[in-house]
Figure 1 (cartoon, one colour):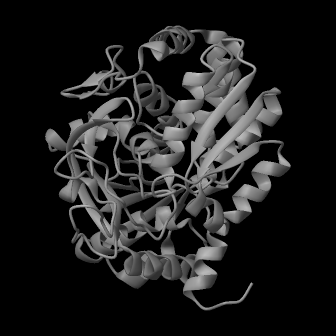
Figure 2 (spheres, rainbow, N blue to C red):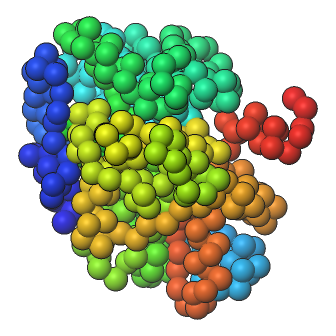
Length: 402
């Protein structure tokens, strides 16, 4: 199953594929050929490993949450601290990989979309290091609520473009980036930020993110001499979840739990949702170049979504995760906004860790699991990012004046 998730066809059961304008077919084919060639190139892989170690700071710690474990009284809780990466999230894993591919293809300009700003920040960072011109598209709503990341992206030399169309969130930023790529297909590289989009992006980003699960296997074997019983990760597009899960897909005894944004609840109208829980109420469709599960109306239009976090309000999900859900290889859940805030507070007060609101969706599910599992079980949850970027959202929620 691990190999199939990275297959060259770009199809995962009935999901995935490449549904793009004819003008972009050569662009995607060029990228596909470069990726599958370079991932076998020792020089490329050594350069990437060196950047992971000496620039990003890998391996990130696998931290035993001793205080939280004792408080909840159940399973042992381990936290994979991707927030300690350079730029503060897992996103730099695939940004470094893709930026090296862009250099190999002799592209001078990189574009990207971002929601929470972590992917945009990581893209701007690696572009600064590698000498690439950088433009970041960001929904106007996210632009306002993630100002710290906007500030740092601009300091790094990136042009940040607030997208005013649609719901002014992540999906609208993706659409804007795709329009840019169509207008500039020869000199521009689109550094897509999750395990979605047309082939080869889903396979490529899972490959670069799989370092997370590989480290967890080694680290937990060193600390506990065994595999985890549960792996828990939040799911927007799916990059951090697939990064954690991929290494363990063939270990059937390891439970994989994907946690979506439950927002204000999963009730919805035909035009809008108060959540972004695709697996709960979504349906199959083809959007933004790939087939997967989307929140959409009866006539196929994408619904407005909501999440307290800026990175989980995407209306679609990784085609690999959709495939794994059909096979019952992953379990799916969701966390509501109030549960996320409670998890954020508990993790901060018990362990002194400020996690991103995205990651606190996984933390909320971990709390539920730990309470009902026996003490001999082990849960690893992916703390995909640190929480300083959420300062303005949290200050508003807690009536704190900045």
